Amino acid sequence: MLSAMIKKEFLLVLRDKHALLALFVMPAIFILIMSVAMRDQFSTNTIEFTVYAQDSDKTQISKKIISDIKEDKNFTLVSHKTEAQFLAYIPKNYSKDTNKKIELVVNKSLKSDQIEIFKSMLSKHLLSARFTSMAETLKKYSPETSKILSSINISNENLYKVKYNDLKSMPNSTQQSVPSWIVFGMFFIIIPMSTIYVNERKQNTLARLNSMNVSILWMSISKSIPYLVINQIQVAIMLGVGIFLVPMFNTSALEINGSLGAIATISLALSVSAIGVSTLIAVSASSSEQATTIGGIFNILLGAIGGVMVPKYIMPESMQRISEFSPMSWGLDGFLDIFLKSANASMILEDALKLFVFGIISLIISMIILRIRINKGL
Image 1 (cartoon, rainbow, N blue to C red):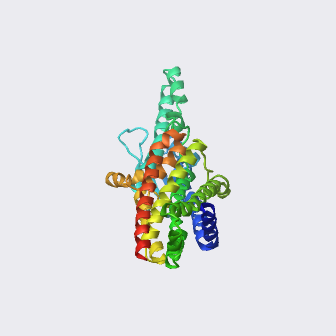
Image 2 (image 1 turned 90 degrees about the vertical axis):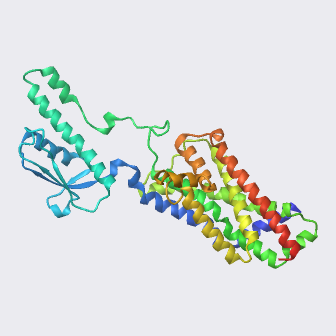
Image 3 (image 1 turned 120 degrees about the vertical axis):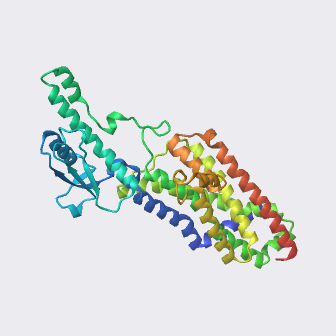
């Protein structure tokens, strides 16, 4: 009996082509778009500023500053002020008078963090020019000291060795986008699930099964298994998009640093959670339109709170605390730990357990509601 019911559910799901497109195609497209769109936000090597420089000092230091700016791939020197984001004016006697400052004019509408990044990048060229000038001055007095100053190379690579949670590199945009849309996409099983539940309730299919001594528990299990399989297919497709498709658009490929066992654990737990929420909404709604509307709004709210729409690290502290109540946040944290921190199954066990418990509780409540509605003939 159970195998026949599971087969029936698979056939019903596979008939709904539009829902399948929403489950598989929509998240894959989002991953591709967001990975490419955010590509430059995760690499300082691709940050570029246009600069108009005016040298009124005409000395070795000022000429070196201009030369270094020209050679820096993060800067583009332009010949007209209107084309520049920043105007840099080197005053007279800049090399002789240490109190003299380079005047910077922000010529475009830029955010404060962009201005600070520009100042930081320009500072290394100013310091390098000063060291070069000091080395030339000391050359005739202390050649050894002059040689040491000349050998100083001011760059981020020489000053810092950056790691991200024991990894050698920072996360790329794909590693941020893939887990977000995996989590968000898995919860959209509410679309086909609600349609099937509402139709079977209206056609008295659930009531007839109940009269044949088929328990609510077996009904719920038979309906859950197909979506459990669908969710795992979703995960595989979206991982494939991140690994194979995204690099075709000149964007970093997804790097999975954790174990496959951890991926299987968190994806199964996330699937149970998504099935629980979707079932609860499906059995509570009076129509498929009502269920998809409520489910869609609920998913968007969970995604916004849980860090799918906006990364949690840029949220205010109060919002970060609220995000801990979203199951999407637990799933997202688990996937990020796997991709970025080389997590194994034991390291994401807490997030997986929270998702599993949340899903089971939601399923139990949904079975109680379904029992009540069948008994009342609703």
